[in-house]
Image (tube, rainbow, N blue to C red):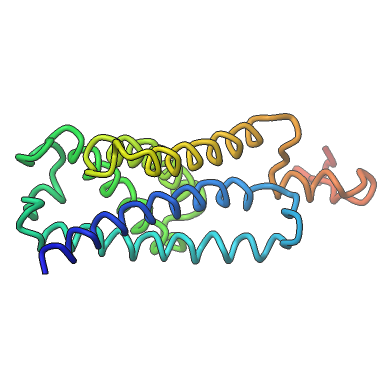
Length: 199
């Protein structure tokens, strides 16, 4: 049983990293005014949302199996409070930091209609911070960290996020709302009025 828990924790941790990579890249794509090849914009949004839910589910299994596995020596306190554990406290603590950041993103996403778009978006940026923290956690806390295949998967994830972020900061990137506004001819746009005087 202990071996099964250990393998489940390792497998879900790795798949969570892969899915978080997809979530970050698709999150950048959803803000773009351009659809990806073969995918309309609404499909990108749906895949982003479903990948996020699956990543959260796998993260829950990852943490749960570590709590149940006596070999891992992870306590409930270690899941909530960073750097409090006995085993590799710095690197396991980074996993706790990533979990806390993602929890903030999840809670605010569930309360988005009450918070409003601007506060939600500000907190949602924490997902960008959670990704590199998760990578460092996996590279240093996991038992597979020194394996060639694990390093290859991590490098592929890093390349995917780097490409998405590079696109995001490039001149070729256009945000969805700005793309729609810029595509409307100037004469067709509504004019703003202030006390009856057009401006």
